[in-house]
Length: 165
Image (cartoon, rainbow, N blue to C red):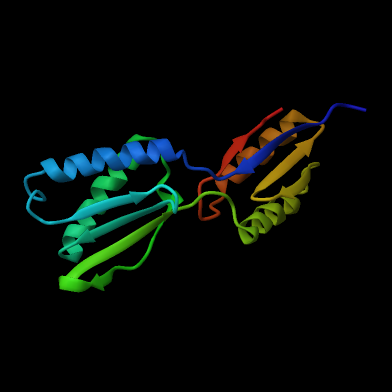
């Protein structure tokens, strides 16, 4: 019998890169002439994996988000890995938005990915393990096909393919 090869489908964000992007955005926020006196605040909670923006208006909040998004892109973090809440009005007429950094794949998305792979009729085996999906097959070419199919689809969050053996 031929040896089986496999890979794992995961969704992870490197929190060190997210912290670096946050630090760069906070620095630019203090230095930019148009935002220097805007009284906008930017905060990162590493434990909760949340980014909080508090700004005097919706426009300024959008500007801060644009700065932050550009830093994330430069650091190689996919923007679909951050789910932003709707703008909330807080005390003093300020606007607050919270962005949750997605780590792991939820059960619904895992089952969607699993169903998508099963519908392709490739000769693969899939197994859900916690917040990741293990895909295995005797043919490495079949696994490469599966990766290409998953890259072509949008499941609402970035996917990485790790432990390819």
